[in-house]
Image 1 (cartoon, rainbow, N blue to C red):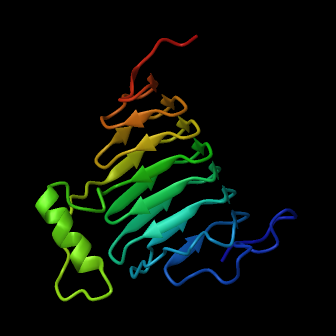
Image 2: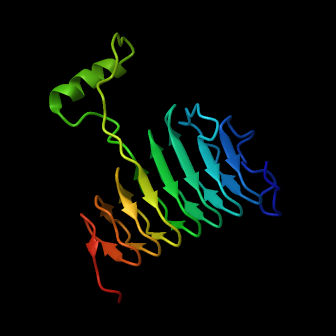
Length: 189
């Protein structure tokens, strides 16, 4: 269990951490809705390193999913949606309303989306169709701007800069600045 700091009296201000969540020393998770969609069943479904601040972050974690976050990170109002694996290094900053997702969370083909809607209804009788997942990896020292979206299968290299509102669908090389929809390399200004 973590040691609380002066600003964070408990690791999570919403109560007791769910089973499968482990946080490092002086890490704070602020926001009562942080674990509203947490369904993780693995022993280390969510691991956060030391001295990290998760302010208003929502952890949507599936039963067989894992999220690993390094130390000295600061995320504000981000949404992490994980059905397989999201790995985030240390010294990563994520701005408000950013979304990181390792899955489409629904089928892409129209006929399968209809089957999925039926399977998710209160009168469901069958399993959901398979949805695609691919791990997301974000290395150390990355800055992700507000309202950015990182999609499944993306690997962001160390020291990269993701511009506000960017939609990242492809890997980003270390030290690269990207912006736009879809995100593309840009010159530093």
